[in-house]
Length: 357
Image (cartoon, rainbow, N blue to C red):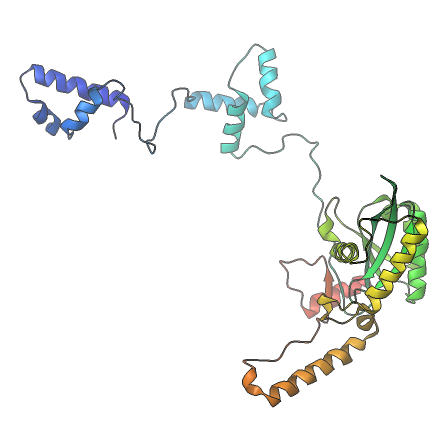
């Protein structure tokens, strides 16, 4: 491929050969060039390669020495902790122009040096500890959600505690504020209702003020409950509570249009929802049994009966079944914030349960 300078030199060589008596076609053959290409190059603007795939070198490209100078400036003790957007103005104040701000960024990116260049960057928060449960009342999660009132900008707040193994709501309250003074007695009452012993339970939540308030933490310590917290601004660390809130707000009776008129109305509706959810709601994650049935252990009998029904149906009409019957078994272990890179085995389970208990 000829660059513009080589094309110009080729055209001049052919002209000199023709002036010396050579034929244009023969001169082109010696140079490995067609006559048609030579004619195109001789036209105005013909020396430029206008193909879209042509490899061009920008006329304003920095030389290797200039590029090295940019790196030297960016990594110097005076500027090594500053981003290019601050380096360039300071150079201008010193009467120097080395390169544009975008050029600094581009070169640093090519050298894999475009990182956060200040010590003020946000710290990385490790993933919360993975807790496992092989029965109810081992790991609970809780959170607070908004309930809209009929007054614009005014909300009621629903506190909900859910058992991750059974998905049962083990405690709830509706208040006008988000305070640890409301959460602490709720946790205490839930532990009394479920007869929780010391060092039996892990309680997971996000990092809100009610969750980390001194009243709340003091109550957990007195009850012997181990607190666990999500990473800041990451709702995925508390998926069971988030899924429960979605079920609540997508319930057909949730007053989206009319909203809640008073705190009492909100409490009455939430009480009805909790009763429905625990005792009537056929939970898809529980093979369509209720959280109450899972919590009390009744699920084993119910799911076993379903398995028998399906086996009888297959035995009566085996031609209608291409494989095994529907799987009606539930997992024996439920994990909160599992590490996807590590497969949870029996040894890992008992090790982590030692932390819980």
